Image 1 (cartoon, rainbow, N blue to C red):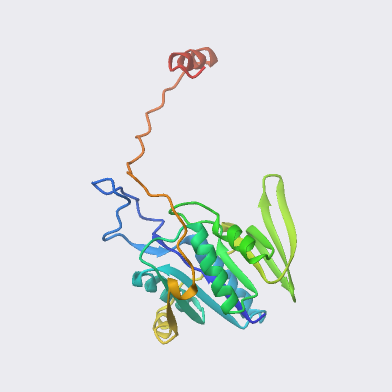
Image 2: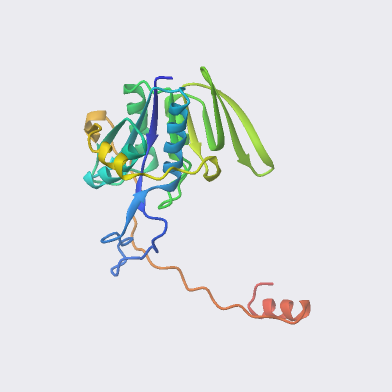
Length: 249
């Protein structure tokens, strides 16, 4: 395999408590630690392992957004990716727009495998990979917990409600990954320094010929209601009575 394409999305770090802005216009990001979407980090780790086994020659990481996304791309390069591409856009890309962008890049880069996180922890859509496969007309395997390559085919194990399901798909293909696939490596200081010399290309959205798809607009944001304190009941009869009092039964 010549090339693997991996998507990296910039999100609020999963260790940070998400706060709504005082004016209710969105989530507070000023002064907040941002990082690679955890599922995307797992996708990159798997691509690097495939390359280290000699089953791919190059790993290219891609992000969509402003120049602030360079930080996440540099982290991906420090992990071991060979090149990075930043598709510059001032507006957040919804899943359909992101899928169209990855389609153009997969075609330009002649990628035989596109690996994405199964979802982003900010919007939880879990749609981009599926849309990309449909637009590309290529097989897909979502929520992968194990990936095995054999020449021009891939065997992907995924977790479903009744256990494990194994899919055999032809390459090129799209794979979205789940948490149990691997544990991403730690980035070391020497790798961070080396990453500064690796190529990071900027491509404008209109250069790809992609028109931003119509998207929903958030009108207002607010914190969820605080969870009410529970009560302890002595027996089933008391439980039923409490539920009836609340109008739940």
